[in-house]
Amino acid sequence: MSRTRRLAAAALATGALLGAAALPASASDGGRDRDHRHEHRHDRDRDRHDRDRDRHDRDRDRDWDWDDRDRDRDRDDRNRDRRRGHGLVLRAVQYDSPGPDLRTDRSLNGEWVLVKNTSRERVRLGGYTLDWDGRSYRFGRMTLRGGEEVKVHTGHGRDNRDHVYQDRDRHQFDNRSGRITLRDDDRFVDRCSWDRWDDGRVSC
Image 1 (cartoon, rainbow, N blue to C red):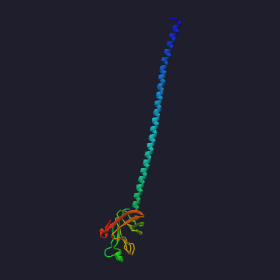
Image 2: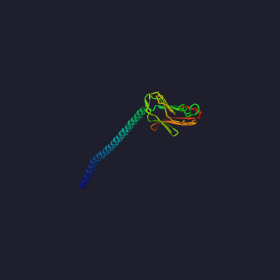
Image 3: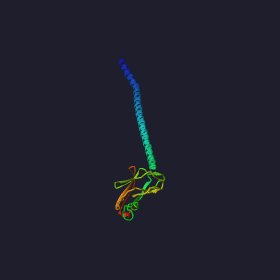
Image 4: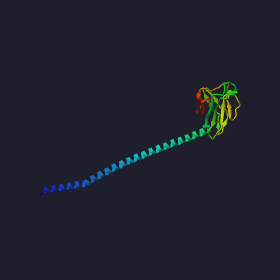
Protein backbone atom coordinates (compact mmCIF):
# COMPACT_ATOMS: atom_id res chain seq x y z
CA MET A 1 0.00 0.00 0.00
CA SER A 2 1.31 3.41 -0.88
CA ARG A 3 2.17 5.95 1.77
CA THR A 4 -0.67 8.21 0.62
CA ARG A 5 -3.27 5.48 1.06
CA ARG A 6 -1.95 4.62 4.51
CA LEU A 7 -2.24 8.25 5.60
CA ALA A 8 -5.80 8.45 4.25
CA ALA A 9 -6.80 5.25 6.04
CA ALA A 10 -5.28 6.53 9.28
CA ALA A 11 -7.15 9.80 8.96
CA LEU A 12 -10.48 7.97 8.45
CA ALA A 13 -9.85 5.77 11.45
CA THR A 14 -9.00 8.77 13.60
CA GLY A 15 -12.19 10.58 12.50
CA ALA A 16 -14.30 7.54 13.33
CA LEU A 17 -12.77 7.31 16.80
CA LEU A 18 -13.36 10.99 17.43
CA GLY A 19 -17.00 10.68 16.29
CA ALA A 20 -17.54 7.68 18.52
CA ALA A 21 -16.05 9.52 21.47
CA ALA A 22 -18.23 12.56 20.84
CA LEU A 23 -21.53 10.60 20.83
CA PRO A 24 -21.67 9.78 24.56
CA ALA A 25 -20.90 13.42 25.44
CA SER A 26 -23.82 14.63 23.29
CA ALA A 27 -26.12 12.01 24.80
CA SER A 28 -24.97 13.02 28.25
CA ASP A 29 -25.63 16.72 27.54
CA GLY A 30 -29.09 15.90 26.22
CA GLY A 31 -29.82 13.90 29.37
CA ARG A 32 -28.72 16.78 31.57
CA ASP A 33 -30.96 19.16 29.61
CA ARG A 34 -33.91 16.84 30.05
CA ASP A 35 -33.20 16.48 33.76
CA HIS A 36 -32.93 20.26 34.09
CA ARG A 37 -36.25 20.79 32.27
CA HIS A 38 -37.90 18.12 34.44
CA GLU A 39 -36.62 19.76 37.63
CA HIS A 40 -37.80 23.18 36.43
CA ARG A 41 -41.25 21.80 35.67
CA HIS A 42 -41.35 20.08 39.04
CA ASP A 43 -40.43 23.38 40.74
CA ARG A 44 -43.22 25.18 38.87
CA ASP A 45 -45.72 22.49 39.90
CA ARG A 46 -44.59 22.70 43.50
CA ASP A 47 -44.91 26.51 43.50
CA ARG A 48 -48.41 26.24 41.99
CA HIS A 49 -49.38 23.68 44.63
CA ASP A 50 -48.08 25.97 47.39
CA ARG A 51 -50.07 28.92 46.00
CA ASP A 52 -53.24 26.79 45.80
CA ARG A 53 -52.73 25.61 49.37
CA ASP A 54 -52.23 29.18 50.60
CA ARG A 55 -55.39 30.29 48.75
CA HIS A 56 -57.33 27.39 50.27
CA ASP A 57 -56.08 28.33 53.76
CA ARG A 58 -57.12 31.96 53.25
CA ASP A 59 -60.58 30.90 52.02
CA ARG A 60 -60.98 28.55 54.97
CA ASP A 61 -59.95 31.24 57.44
CA ARG A 62 -62.39 33.68 55.82
CA ASP A 63 -65.19 31.10 56.03
CA TRP A 64 -64.39 30.51 59.70
CA ASP A 65 -64.47 34.26 60.31
CA TRP A 66 -67.90 34.50 58.69
CA ASP A 67 -69.13 31.51 60.71
CA ASP A 68 -67.89 33.16 63.91
CA ARG A 69 -69.59 36.44 63.02
CA ASP A 70 -72.84 34.63 62.18
CA ARG A 71 -72.76 32.75 65.49
CA ASP A 72 -72.05 35.97 67.37
CA ARG A 73 -74.88 37.76 65.56
CA ASP A 74 -77.33 34.92 66.28
CA ARG A 75 -76.32 34.89 69.95
CA ASP A 76 -76.74 38.67 70.19
CA ASP A 77 -80.18 38.46 68.54
CA ARG A 78 -81.27 35.73 70.97
CA ASN A 79 -80.03 37.72 73.95
CA ARG A 80 -81.71 40.90 72.71
CA ASP A 81 -84.99 39.04 72.12
CA ARG A 82 -84.74 37.54 75.61
CA ARG A 83 -84.10 40.95 77.16
CA ARG A 84 -86.88 42.60 75.18
CA GLY A 85 -89.27 39.72 75.83
CA HIS A 86 -90.34 38.78 72.33
CA GLY A 87 -92.52 36.10 73.84
CA LEU A 88 -95.03 38.95 74.09
CA VAL A 89 -98.13 38.31 71.95
CA LEU A 90 -101.63 39.62 71.32
CA ARG A 91 -104.04 37.09 72.80
CA ALA A 92 -107.50 38.47 72.07
CA VAL A 93 -109.36 41.66 71.11
CA GLN A 94 -112.87 42.66 72.25
CA TYR A 95 -113.40 45.17 69.46
CA ASP A 96 -117.18 45.56 69.97
CA SER A 97 -118.18 46.39 73.50
CA PRO A 98 -121.19 44.34 74.66
CA GLY A 99 -124.45 46.30 74.56
CA PRO A 100 -125.00 49.72 73.01
CA ASP A 101 -121.94 51.89 72.39
CA LEU A 102 -122.32 54.48 75.10
CA ARG A 103 -119.60 56.81 76.33
CA THR A 104 -119.73 55.56 79.87
CA ASP A 105 -116.62 53.95 81.34
CA ARG A 106 -118.52 50.71 81.64
CA SER A 107 -119.21 50.70 77.90
CA LEU A 108 -115.76 51.99 76.91
CA ASN A 109 -113.96 49.49 79.12
CA GLY A 110 -115.92 46.67 77.50
CA GLU A 111 -113.58 47.31 74.57
CA TRP A 112 -110.12 45.87 75.26
CA VAL A 113 -106.96 44.14 74.00
CA LEU A 114 -105.36 41.21 75.84
CA VAL A 115 -101.55 41.00 75.79
CA LYS A 116 -99.68 37.98 77.18
CA ASN A 117 -96.07 37.14 77.97
CA THR A 118 -95.62 33.57 76.70
CA SER A 119 -91.93 33.41 77.69
CA ARG A 120 -90.42 32.46 81.05
CA GLU A 121 -88.63 35.79 81.38
CA ARG A 122 -89.89 39.06 82.81
CA VAL A 123 -90.82 41.61 80.19
CA ARG A 124 -90.68 45.34 80.79
CA LEU A 125 -93.51 46.87 78.76
CA GLY A 126 -92.05 50.38 78.63
CA GLY A 127 -91.45 51.19 74.95
CA TYR A 128 -94.12 48.80 73.63
CA THR A 129 -97.09 50.26 71.75
CA LEU A 130 -100.43 49.15 70.37
CA ASP A 131 -101.15 50.75 66.96
CA TRP A 132 -104.41 50.81 64.98
CA ASP A 133 -106.08 53.16 62.46
CA GLY A 134 -103.44 55.86 62.89
CA ARG A 135 -103.83 55.79 66.69
CA SER A 136 -101.53 54.43 69.33
CA TYR A 137 -101.34 53.43 72.99
CA ARG A 138 -97.94 53.36 74.73
CA PHE A 139 -97.46 51.15 77.76
CA GLY A 140 -96.22 52.73 80.95
CA ARG A 141 -93.62 51.37 83.34
CA MET A 142 -94.85 47.91 84.20
CA THR A 143 -93.54 44.36 84.02
CA LEU A 144 -95.16 41.10 82.99
CA ARG A 145 -93.72 37.96 84.54
CA GLY A 146 -93.52 34.78 82.51
CA GLY A 147 -97.04 33.52 81.67
CA GLU A 148 -98.77 36.71 82.86
CA GLU A 149 -101.18 38.80 80.80
CA VAL A 150 -102.66 42.28 80.94
CA LYS A 151 -105.90 43.65 79.51
CA VAL A 152 -105.75 47.12 77.92
CA HIS A 153 -109.14 48.87 78.23
CA THR A 154 -110.29 51.88 76.21
CA GLY A 155 -111.91 53.93 78.98
CA HIS A 156 -110.88 55.32 82.35
CA GLY A 157 -109.73 53.38 85.40
CA ARG A 158 -106.89 52.72 87.81
CA ASP A 159 -104.00 50.71 86.39
CA ASN A 160 -102.93 47.50 88.17
CA ARG A 161 -101.08 44.31 87.31
CA ASP A 162 -103.98 42.84 85.33
CA HIS A 163 -105.70 45.89 83.81
CA VAL A 164 -104.52 49.16 82.31
CA TYR A 165 -106.61 51.97 80.85
CA GLN A 166 -106.17 54.29 77.87
CA ASP A 167 -108.37 57.02 79.41
CA ARG A 168 -110.21 57.72 76.16
CA ASP A 169 -113.73 59.13 75.84
CA ARG A 170 -114.72 57.40 72.60
CA HIS A 171 -114.79 53.83 71.33
CA GLN A 172 -111.70 53.08 69.27
CA PHE A 173 -112.29 50.01 67.14
CA ASP A 174 -114.33 49.53 63.99
CA ASN A 175 -116.98 46.87 64.58
CA ARG A 176 -116.87 45.66 60.98
CA SER A 177 -113.15 45.09 60.42
CA GLY A 178 -109.85 46.21 61.82
CA ARG A 179 -106.31 45.36 62.73
CA ILE A 180 -104.11 46.13 65.72
CA THR A 181 -100.33 45.80 65.88
CA LEU A 182 -97.99 45.33 68.82
CA ARG A 183 -94.62 47.02 68.38
CA ASP A 184 -91.44 47.40 70.37
CA ASP A 185 -89.96 50.84 69.63
CA ASP A 186 -91.33 50.66 66.06
CA ARG A 187 -90.17 47.04 65.67
CA PHE A 188 -92.98 44.66 64.71
CA VAL A 189 -93.83 42.09 67.38
CA ASP A 190 -97.36 40.77 66.70
CA ARG A 191 -100.61 41.60 64.88
CA CYS A 192 -104.29 40.67 65.17
CA SER A 193 -107.12 41.30 62.68
CA TRP A 194 -110.89 40.90 62.76
CA ASP A 195 -113.99 41.33 60.60
CA ARG A 196 -117.73 41.48 61.15
CA TRP A 197 -118.03 37.66 61.28
CA ASP A 198 -116.12 37.47 64.58
CA ASP A 199 -119.14 38.47 66.73
CA GLY A 200 -117.42 41.35 68.51
CA ARG A 201 -114.43 39.39 69.84
CA VAL A 202 -111.49 37.64 68.15
CA SER A 203 -108.82 35.31 69.51
CA CYS A 204 -105.39 36.10 68.08
